[in-house]
Image (cartoon, rainbow, N blue to C red; front, side, top):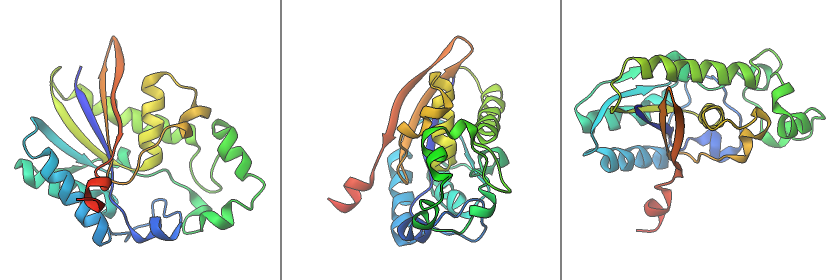
Length: 205
């Protein structure tokens, strides 16, 4: 049963402004996000990590690369770790989206929701879990590896491995640059750490 560190990318200006970037290219870490990525690299530099995988989006790869470098590894892009495709909602503010009638469905019954022109949460969950299972099959039982992804895919994956209904996945939380650790195998899964957040240490030395 490999142990998987699910790491959300660091902060970017879309997070600060409350805008949903979805799979939009060209969204980079801001200064705080770069500092978070470096802090993660320093935190994990001595860990026995065998591989570092990343979503193809810039904000994720810019988080993964310093971690991989600190470990003497190369960050490997895996498309299945990409953010949920939010279709026509991409680039819109959370404030404007909360005014929509369908927003209530997003919060209460996300299993029934599909982003206009994009994915359903069920499809996003299936994709990210399929990617994790593919990576797990490539590793030995006691291996430790990193997957740098995004808030919703991480929460969807955790919900799946814990056996939580999809409608409850938003009860979980993954802050920017947080670490969530899962022990995953044929006989079952264990959540070792949820949302271990270094940001407090960054702002309160």
